[in-house]
Length: 171
Image (cartoon, rainbow, N blue to C red; front, side, top):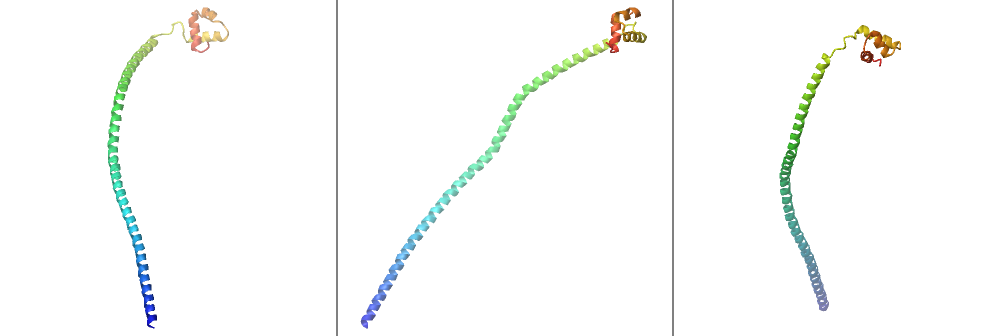
């Protein structure tokens, strides 16, 4: 029995050594996997740090651009305003000159019109044409008498007879 106990103890020792070897092997594999995971996490932290740093730099650039854009816009607006003013001043001066020319022309035309109106008022109809003569001229013209005959019978000029007919829209 001693021998069986020895075999049992040796077997037990082999099993324990085998278990210890198995545990150590597995612990090494797990430890290796944990190291690779730790390294991957560390690499991710570095990449995140670099990305965070780059993001902050880009945000600073964007912020500075956003701050400079209104200044640029204001300067562009001011420059455009100056250019428009420089272009519009000669046009405005030309328009003022044209307006003055038209005003002078308008005054001359109005003066001429007043002069013509006064001259027309001063014109008088020939004294030989009266309401009675007009009725006689119209009556004879409606009867078919020609203008020369009407002028001779009523002792009027041919122009006076034509004038009466035109006024009354018969000719």
